Image (tube, rainbow over all chains, first blue to last red; front, side, top):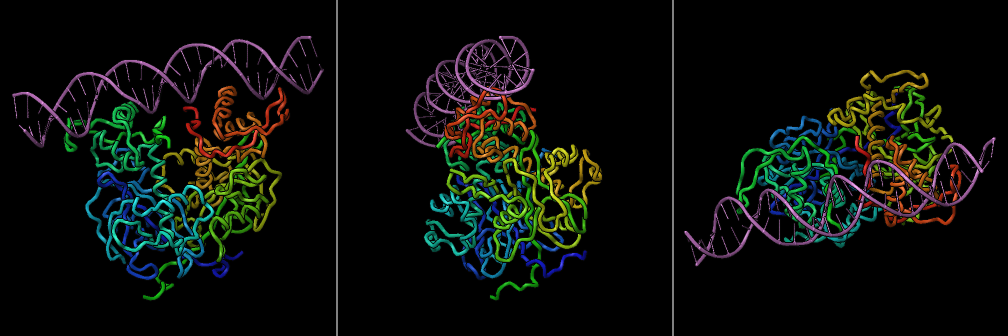
Length: 277
Length: 277
DNA sequence: GATCATAGTCGTCTTCCTGACGATAAGCAC
DNA sequence: GTGCTTATCGTCAGGAAGACGACTATGATC
């Protein structure tokens, strides 16, 4: 039997889109770039680009991450002592509704990256500018509500439902291009749930950090307040989660705090569950 | 600015592959089909096929599921009272290493389906035959070990590592085509972890089932033995997990057991964690 | 320098959950 | 009936987590 007849299947464009999350000033933020071309010209979008001919999906995601942020992707399979400013990068989900891009059939493999607080992003490629936007600004209540319930609407919103399509005035929710609001919502939910049962929250921290800084990461990602004493007991009591780095710091004010590094443990058992609703 | 120049990006073929899991005779089994054409002709593979021009990714997965098993995919967003023999279907991950198919660049969006025990599968499409294979047979120890640790190898194994490439004699591990061993391993791990914190295990059960039948599902999926008394306390004590269906059955022998239906709750809180290693 | 505000760290107490396991109930095969 | 199987209820001890008191160590302010 001959190889595939190229006319036997429809050709797709395959892209990677990135949900890059970080914690800035006690808020969970994501990297967005302004689109320089139609469609959705001038709207904010998640960074991304085409997968190249000879490129792995994760390779394409890592390349985009470097282009947009200068971050070197850290492969989760690497040995536990993480190289300094590597970001965590993992595949999130794939979005391929027929109408998600009005120009052609595009399947986008979204990736989730978690990074420590970074200087201002450098714009790259076809984006006029880039910025860190608090996810709260980008995800209106309607979008978030839809995330939790309506899996069926899973890619319908190429044009957006309309209501959330606010303009560019600062402060109000800004509608992202394409189905990127859903992708972002899925990425945020993945991050929120994954720090429950893994040590991934340390990916938001610099190489050395204090228990309080780690707690503020959890508080920003979950949007809740945690008891400092119970949190301290939990993270220092979980073997392998944190290893003392040997110094102290007062960068938060108050009593000096011990510095830690991320330990080798990647799975938290038992997990640290989000407080109830 | 003009629409995309079609020569500006490489064309991909996009397929969906299915990891269909069920519990048969106390063993976790998956649906495999025998390949009728090269490459890997005669080898077992996961069912799958091309995504059509006008088709959603989940739509393509649901179509393949019907073609291979006759199962009607159950959308998780539907109202909780699940229609009778619908299977749970969710996206798993996407595999797109450049060399995963020797003929051309193929990106495969794998989906995970969980189904109650079914009659013998009906072969469809280009498969000479289909069968339910215990995952233990398909996943040699080396493959499983690789799953837990080596995320780096994430799609490299189009040809397989070689060692597991046993032939077709019954009993020994059988090497799956393409990178399907990894896809299957990822799907099994997803199922194993997801029944911890969700009520998804009921997807393996008929509409009405006993606590003991549900326990045997957990035991088969995790490959462990659970204490019947503690399990009973846990599942009947979690509000919304099970609702009494009103009858009893003795199909397992022994004292008649109460029949239950899956309740509306989808999230188990606190979760039922796998026993330690 | 005393006082205050801010954070960090150590304990205690109560409650809930779980694992281990005894005991009883209700079918079937003989 | 006896024996075997599975289901279901109960008890008990240990661990984890939430609530919260107490103390420590710094900088800021008076």
